[in-house]
Image 1: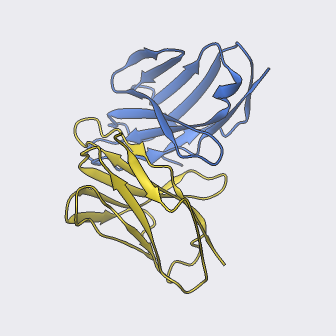
Image 2: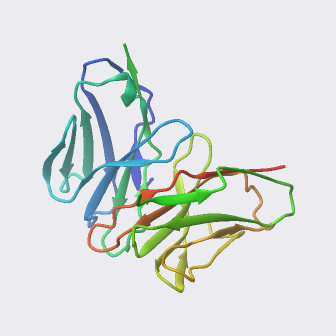
Length: 112
Length: 113
C-alpha cells in the first residue's frame, strides 16, 4: 500500500465548476499536509498547507482535513483553464523532520 | 528577490561522466532537499539536509552525492554509478520547524546519453 494515494486522473472539469481532489495517507500521526500545483514541465508550487482538522480557505482554494479518516482534500471553485495542472498531495509525518511523503498527483483538465 | 535558483536549466552529458547540479537559496532556510521526478511519476527524495554540514540519505541516494558547506547552497553530484540519471531534478528548501513547508526551485532537466 502506498503511503500517500491520489487518483491519477485526468479529472475533467468544466470551466466555472468545482474540482474536487482527494488524498489519503497511511501514517496516522501525520501532522502537516500540503497541496502543490505543478504545470507541465515546471516545478511544483505550494498552494495550500493545512495542519488542523476542518477547512482552510485561500481564494478559490479550500483544503479539508480529516485526521480520523486519514484524508485531505482540495476544492478548486470556479475552475479556470489556468487551473489545468497536476496537483500533488504531500504529508509530513510526525518526527520525519520534513521528509515529506508525496502522492503521485492528480491531473486536472479544465475544459472551456 | 528571495528565492531558490537552480542551474543550469538543461544539462546534457555523456554516460560515464559525473555532473554537479547547483542549488542556491537566499530565503535563510535551514533545510534543503533534492528530489528526482521521472515522466508521469511523483517526487522521490534523494538527499536532504536539516543544517549546515549535515545531510541524510533519502529513498534513492545510490549514485548521488551532496555537500552542505554553506546554508545557502546544496549541490548535488550525479555520479557515473547512477544507472538511470536522465530525469528532472528538483531542489527545495524549508524554514524547518514547525511547519516544514517546502518551496521548490525551477528544476534542472538532465539528459545522459
